[in-house]
Amino acid sequence: YDTEAIIYYYDTFPYLAKDRRLRNRIYSYTLYRLQTTPWIQINDKKYSPSQIVLYSGIGDKVDGIIGVSRDDLFKHSNVEEDERDRIIRKLGIAKDFSELPDELLYRILLQAPDFDHNGKISKKIYSDIAKGKISAPSDKKASEYFFEIGKLYTRSGQFIPVRDVVYTYKVTPKQFEKNYYLLSLPPKQGEKKISEWFGVRSINLDVIAVGLQALHVLDDGFQKNDMPKNRIAMLAIKWDDYTTDRDRNKVKNIQIHLVDILNVRINSEDDVIKLNDYGTAVDEKIKNKYYVKIPTTTNDISRLRLDTLFANAIMDIFSQYLLLNDDEFIQRGARAVAADIHNTRLLFNNDPNFSEAEDHILGK
Image (cartoon, rainbow, N blue to C red; front, side, top):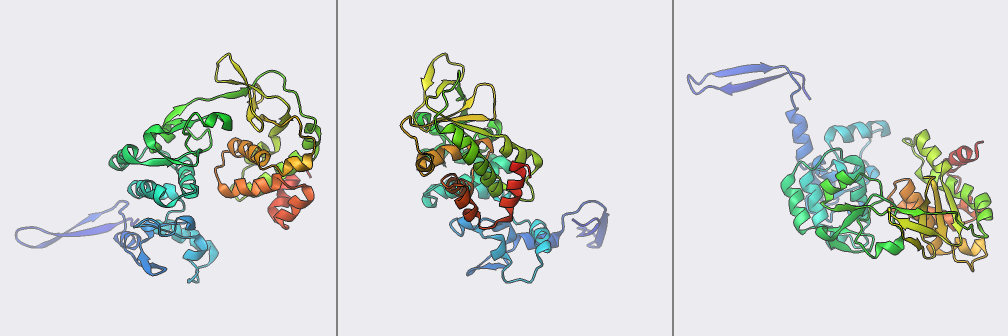
């Protein structure tokens, strides 16, 4: 912004130039031209800063927008690292999808079923919107058009018309997902915001473990050997400059127990249901305590770790509890769940975040 501007204009009579001095926050015309003129060469085309989002996954799949990584954006420049954030902010380059104009955002969502076959890009967009938007869409025409004809990626692995998709604010075991087309977004993201931006209705599916749970024979060893390692791995993956003490303590305090039988109640209904193998539920009273139903015939923790369904169940709990919908977090976390402590260290290959996380979790 400029702090002062002089506007020149011509009166119709006697055709004399006049001026008016304004002292206020005047949007810089030079900056406006820099932000909206295509001058940044990416591949074989030029883009304006307002057409760029720092996410290489989308590439040039949608006309009028280009996704690049931060490093690729500056690879032909000599800009120092500490200056890059200032330039990105000043030019109005979107650091994630939530910073794109509404019209562009909904254009991407409309076209996503044509190119985003595994839903990875869509889930990134949904997560960015849920975390980054603080008010309802300003472009009502664009949002209402999307609600009318658009499709959303669901936990079923399909793009489904908006009118048929629902969102649950609560953790939902997979055996209940077949009854609904659930938006592929973790719980607890804000029902009003999700409704405003995606046009979906919310349903409440509280899956609560009731009564005393019969612990599986493998639970004791899992608590001593696996849970500390899992907590360290999840915190190491999540750790960055923005990780707060609250975030770290949340990972440190999560409890996950293995049980033979898992009785749950859905919402406030009286009927008690037994979950299938690898179903998960939160404790009735302790909200950081979760359970996973394990096959009663399983008696080898090493084989259990390698079971993909088990790793997915553990990662469902971590991703929902920590409100993370990131594919990299889930994939790296699942590999750590499948490994013992020695191989988990090898997975992180002397990553300093692992040492930091270990010190925090183990209280060193």
